[in-house]
Length: 462
Image 1 (cartoon, one colour):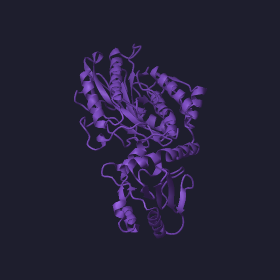
Image 2 (tube, rainbow, N blue to C red):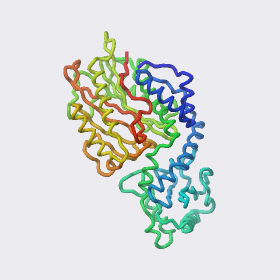
Image 3 (cartoon, one colour):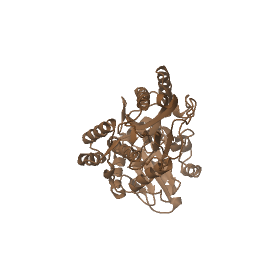
Image 4 (cartoon, rainbow, N blue to C red):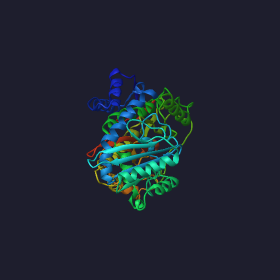
């Protein structure tokens, strides 16, 4: 891909997206998607906010989520109260999605109480030695640990909720954050008979984590475009010199590039290569190896960053031209098109209420009928790179996944559309090439929308 310097309107777009202005954000999203579809890298890296400047938009997005999403999700889960209790350095996985920035730990013991009111609104209370202030009302802030637990017990007794959600779950790790010790302390401060009111909050936790708000939807395209722009840099002559640069060199370039921008990665970037003469068996789950990059190599990378609390997961492909070659071989262009066709089949099968296992089974059947050799292992993204929600296949299991694969699709949820296809290349004497693609997308309840476009043309290293 060719790299373009950031135009003023693109930087303005990114800023407007961060402010949650829907109409400009939609315009920006289309602009970015169009540019990527044309094989251009849109460099929006200059729009990355400094850490201090991220606090305000993150807190405004939190306020919006607490105001607009939490009441409807607590009603959906039929909970009268939700307790999130955490200790310093052993925080509940959901904890940091609920507290304002800057927050680095649950100081000592922090108790968050969400109390659903008769009118459907939710009162947000903290029982915490170090009060947060907005968006929480402090229900207690003084005394020792015993006094804190006593205050929680008295508050629950006074409110008299019939169903109290606590974060315990056999199925979902992110919904199992209440430790055994805290669970025992909670039971000890409740009146007799209240044990029967304690229920798993796993449905609420999963729905809270998987659902995107309006302002998150507006900002997400810019976040995804940052990941794609750095891949465009890495798979170019700016970084790669054939015969000199290794796949490990490129992986570390990507990591250090994100670090220079203050964008945390949630896994070490992976870069690998395929080439003629290196076998890619029909039954191999993954093809590719590490080593020195040479002309004629097919490159693949897998990267994931988080920004403004939202995470991405992206895989793209590159090609290193041989001497005398002017473009990517025709067989590789056709293989990329097959990968895009596979994506289309998968995305078309998203429907509200359909489970991940049902989407998997339908897509596999249609891909096989179309003669596409594919593997599907798509997953939700959001506050985590591997976020809760419907599992749509796993790389080591192309059959139904019990439990998490049975979770239904809901509107306003984001996914990594992830998987691969294999195609035989005439230019490689019929040897397989594996096209591994992954793009972050949002399902709005009607269709799947790639948040910053998707790869339809090869990155080319000349």
